[in-house]
Image 1 (tube, each protein chain N blue to C red):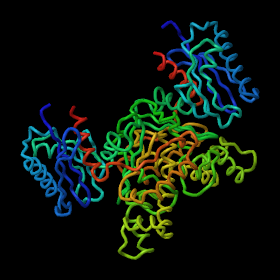
Image 2: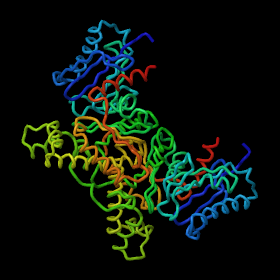
Image 3: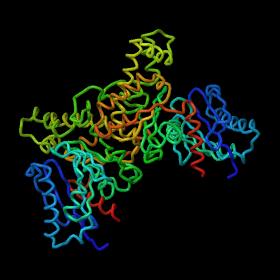
Image 4: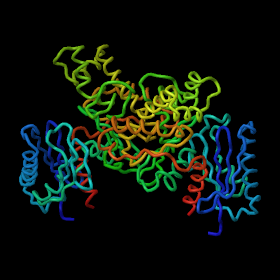
Length: 307
Length: 307
């Protein structure tokens, strides 16, 4: 193949990140813009096309140098049909055949997938889950996303809507979730829930980073908040470990920044409460690829999908 | 191949069932004996060998007519090494290399697996889950067993210990489970738990069948018990649906005899509480193969493993 680059896009509720990535998965150019500047679906679609064109031209390339475009989106995606079912945090997106639309507008091959799935793919191919056959990779942020690797491949399920561990109920009764569920993990450990607890303890200006720092410096109140997060997360992971019997669990996203206090307690809960065979030797690892995981995963999807 | 039959064995805490099955998976001869007559691991192993020999000879066959022996056991099994890790309900079994032992004693090829996995395999190949690519099959009895079918194949996980939905926590705090976990589904809906509730309502002699019959005839107290079972089971299945995004869920075992009251409420809970894409069109089906599912599954394992 003569094409030497992939354009990767990570569309979030806040930012649209776009990168030019070579076939060894090294990011050679990266841009970030605010998603919120584009008030409608059509304006955002046009902005995506313009950004693709710009990043290609800025590197003095032409379409023939581009193997394809990989796009990660924060919602359920029908990969085969290139269809965005809806985006919970970006209004106006419902039943959008985005693959077709972008291919017509750009003249390039376009691949779509859910962003958490792409991050998991990246962590499996190049990050913390590398070399494990069965893995569960989580991204903890405003939402709790995840991907399941089964026998070395991303497991999609009937609708490519598998791995929604953020919507595993951890109690029979509890807070209502936006998804329609009850007591979903995400209602307990989504960023907003943690920040609300942190604000009650430390005032309105505290951030997640600050909360992590406070815990590392021994603040009992900050530690209590993180241990509580670990209890909720641990309960869900005990269920996932007993159900999936994976080799490893990879945890990334902002909350993973809490580090040792969170990871040790989660490991302790799994070791104590999951079944003995499943819990023995399971690795609970911090994600390696950070904020670029989604972009790298999108490039892997394009390269593996085409080659 | 000249061999025309398979010997299947379903070893339970109460009964040992053995069958001669032809290569079209029809049971041509079946025997049941009490597991509890054999007080030690070695006595039970000898009894299994004798039963294999007997059923072959009773049909006027010789070893060369037997493709292999398939054995389902109620506990975690290392399929590749033919190793029984332990059997929670049969004392004295720990780290037993049963495949090797039985092959030496019988001169036949022997395959082992967990009983719930074999029932799931049977329901997928020949029963209610036939034709579905991704399925979760449950057997509700004293224990809550299950198997996961992924892309048409039994999913095993790292240790062949996947699919333990009976040990999915459905609450963060709750009853302690024998497995070491907290608030495992099985502690709420294992037969013993349901029978205890039924006895409080209907006296010491009530059986599960009677409880089902009472509910079908409109007893409010019996219905309340089954709706409660449905709530616990539904909560776990909402998690499994969001995590696995299967095409169907198959429910078998004694509790499935409760029928409509249980199935309708479980469907309602999934439809209301699971995520919209995953819940839409999912089938919740009653298992088709009944008590023979384990025997048939063991035969499928042998035939698919050898051919």
